[in-house]
Amino acid sequence: MRLASVGAHASGALPAAKAQASGSAIRLLVETAAVLGRAAVQANADAFAAVRGADDRDIQSTGVTSYDGIAAALNARGVRTRRKGEWHASTVRNLLLRRPRLALS
Image (cartoon, rainbow, N blue to C red):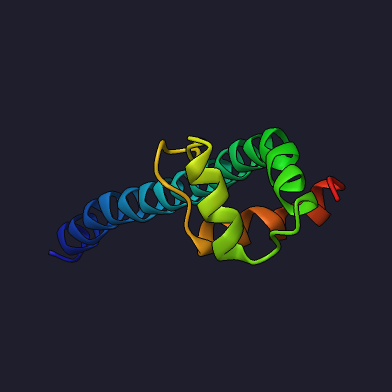
């Protein structure tokens, strides 16, 4: 009787250990994908900011310095955001805050 109960316990422990290891591996893959995804999004935004840097500097040289003013000027010129949307004060702010990190000042 005793051997049968030990065997039953051992046979139940193996699938549980496999499930736990599998869960750990899945968590590691998800975390890795998230890090790589954030890096790709950031690289994409950095590239866009580098291209758009000339536009906002040109607008600022005309005396328009507020986020709203720059957004209005970009929209008037027909310049679209990375996702083909219209510019808002917050998108201009995000773009300008990215510039020092890229040394685009």
